[in-house]
Length: 494
Figure 1 (cartoon, helix red, strand yellow):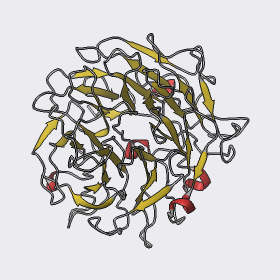
Figure 2 (cartoon, helix red, strand yellow):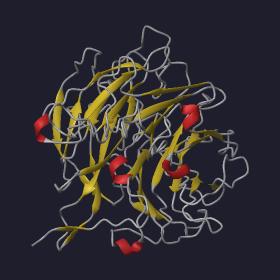
Figure 3 (spheres, one colour):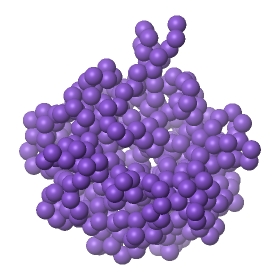
Figure 4 (cartoon, helix red, strand yellow):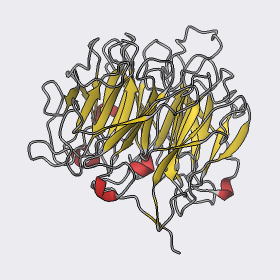
């Protein structure tokens, strides 16, 4: 029997599976990694690359041209401040930057995947960056991952993470996920490739290239031609002090001609990530983990952005979001579904909306309940196709509230720009505390703005909700070349 894999996407953009990833951070649903007290005055905050007490936002342009090399890729850091992400300082890093391993080459895709963590335990957040298109010697598209080191001046220099089995895979560095998988208080790094296993490096990284050890986890994801794992999402679901890992790919358990997307929960343990106790969860490439009902357990949100016609399990017209409740036993507390036709959710379910294309959790109003930003980059607004919209829902003891929700788009007063065909507002999202007030702020990516140049809008929490007064950052401010299709804003971490 010929195995046919069914995974339809009726939106015009098809880069999600290539560029999907998740960031770990105190305000984005991931486990805040505990580290020993540093000798410096660094804040120790996840995503704070310069240690000033404000979380920063790393924005990727993986197809940016660098020194004439098409699709070489770059990462731009919007440093946090009291005025918000990117208001005080912006820095762009590529493989041509001083101290960064390698050199910018055609098709490297530097920045396709990123994740933040304090990998060397000095109190400054570092940034792991994947370049899955990097040619590793004679190995075309072998891929690489590097750690850019945080310090008082921000990110500077870097170290290559050694690939333990270069000849056995391609696209090393896609995807990435930081977390404390064995609960020893040090940040570990999980690295994917085009295979169905994950290489996990234990904390204890040094600038000379050593780590605290390495092990490999073969996941339940089906081996297929091409990339097996689409996304890795870290977070502590069972509240045991160890980061658990959500792995997305194809499942191989359904009988018949088709195999569908699925997520697998792999718990952390004293020895790290394990398949013992693994659980299959609903379909959807993008997910996040946070405490929606403030019970101490990590709840999982999964975006199933496909339309019902895709036949993907759980798919709905216009897309859907699954909420899986965390318990001491893992993600076993039941599941609920959000659609745009759900009471209180902005908009109406329409074919091609892509509701759930992107998700991010964080506590916007400081009430102890994680709130949810949902991207619908395929939303048509006032006759403009794929203009895009972001919905913001607020957490409570019983889940997401049906009142007080927000809808943001480029025609919302205060938001820079205007609705245009194919912009895809909400194509990437990150909730993180860029203003240092203890409340999550929102950064929105529009990677297809201006013929895929890309654009980012930084919003701040006003203490109770997301303020609609946004700051736009484009290629000029980021000092990214306009050549080709940079896709600035397709991926963010912090």
